[in-house]
Length: 431
Ligand code: SDX
Image 1 (cartoon, protein in one colour):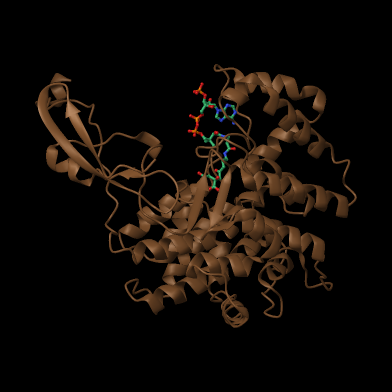
Image 2: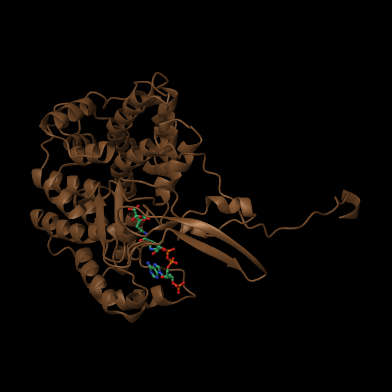
């Protein structure tokens, strides 16, 4: 059926009517353009923005009912199978898959921006050694805005591109050094002869004492994990980056805000929480008691890695992640990994349970990622940092799209005021 072009609001207390235009995109639901409502003295009300389109975008499309995820129209399954992360980062930024020359130029530019200003070493040393890597990433990425003033005219597309290069190229170094700082091992400087993901694995796991040879199967698995996490429409952290950017804040500060938002356990922190949950369950014999807790309204426990604001079907990324799990555990001879057995059994039980079926709660991207990351040797407190590393490609693309959008305005939501009406001040002696 053809989408309507307008809707008419009627009121039960008057004959007044308000006509609102309906806008339709290329895919997905049409939207009711409510911008003119404010002239009529009304706001819309939508805590958590469950029914609100905050912008128009051509970067990522999600169909939650069908479990579809496209980056610039390409299904995530195809990109995860055939692309590498640099190619996907280019696709998200520029809208097209790069040809060989474009990919070479983009890749070599990345390799030329991997180093940090040497003074940033002291920023790391301001943190306690046991600081959570996400706290360090928020701080150090934000601090980049104190070092790069030569290209922060965000109205200049070239400045935006240079800032994008710097952020994309430096976040792997910052993430790896956040880990090294935690362990007390020396920082490993980026090696520009390595690919983006190989370089990250090198900076994470190499030491000055012996040569580091990346395992191609594990590197490919990590590359796929990065692709799966690269972008996801207007999720909480991307919306944070957009809102920060709408005030004209510099891109490094905006990405730092996105990292902070991603850290929450309901969002990017769920992969760390999901593994902790699997470890707490420990054995398939204990699964039912945790399922019962997840269904118990008086218990705040939730199955971490399950449920999604948009997906009311299997998160397509979870399926690819499950397959990657098998590959990595087999490569490492860990196919009897007890946590993987718990995860597979938990998924099977939950997907047959009335509560999860009716509420359309399926495994999301975070359910299996913790098992894979742990098998790759990534420490649990670095799981969300991995998510941030990958999502930086999406955040930068979304920020750039917003800044160059002619409809872009400073984000300034309103509210339903439920506080006190005007009242007289009470002097201290009368309180
Ligand atoms: C990510 O937005 C994105 O795109 C995010 C992300 C991305 O790539 O950027 O996809 C990454 O953040 C994935 C989600 C990771 N979070 C988790 O795995 C944490 C566990 N899941 C949730 O807390 C929850 O499912 C959310 C936060 C993900 C979604 O919450 P919603 O959309 O606000 O849904 P809700 O909390 O209103 O839940 C609906 C119902 C509730 O029951 P009722 O009040 O209707 O009786 O489902 C229940 C919830 O209690 N429910 C769960 C549950 N998730 C929802 N019950 C048990 N276990 C769960 N995991």
